[in-house]
Image 1 (cartoon, rainbow, N blue to C red):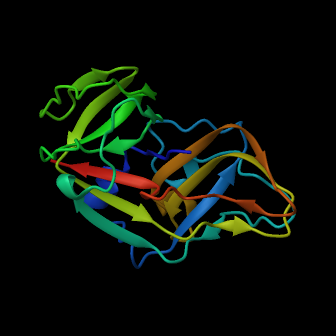
Image 2 (image 1 turned 135 degrees about the vertical axis):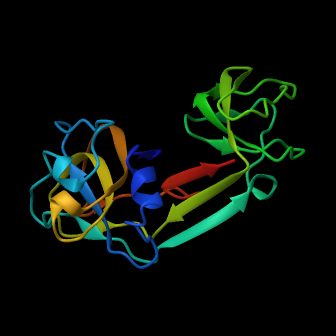
Amino acid sequence: MAASLYPAIYTHLTGGSIVFASDTIKAAITTSAYTPALTDDFFNDVTNEVVGTGYTAGGATLASKTATLTAANSWGTSRANSTAYNLGDVVRPATGNGYLYQAVVAGTSGGSIPTYPTVVGQTVADGGVTWVCKGRYVMALDAADPSWPSSTITGRTVVIYKSTGTGSTSPLICYDTAAADVSSTNGTWTYQIATNGYALFFMD
């Protein structure tokens, strides 16, 4: 699962309304009836939150939060020939050029190195993959995987947000929608946060 940022997050960050390390950041689960919209900016815009045994409205508070800034040439994953990549994967060229690239079309990379664009927003085809130039730095937000033990839940989308205790003032950060409904397994519903962070902010 690859998280997508709510566009309003940039306004919230520049306005100082989110301090990730010290704020109460929560993960909430919704049913398939909620479709994230570009205009959603606060938690009161989120509808169809799940109900069920072991789930409390508003979701669970994230623990062990980290925010890591990484320069492009220090990114841990470099692009390789003839390799399968998923939508949202982030790579740097094997020989760093100071930029990061994200897969906007999933597929298998070509057998030779593509000509990488160095203008943010430009794309390049690489076998079956299409990469977009994202920037020179990336900020990765991460945390311990939230889980709901002793639960009976079926959900589709996880919403990450800063909780102020009031929905209309709780800024949205990102969301992650599964391809199909996910139900509790052996009484536990767990959201696995990707190794590279569940929210990536690219900077030029």
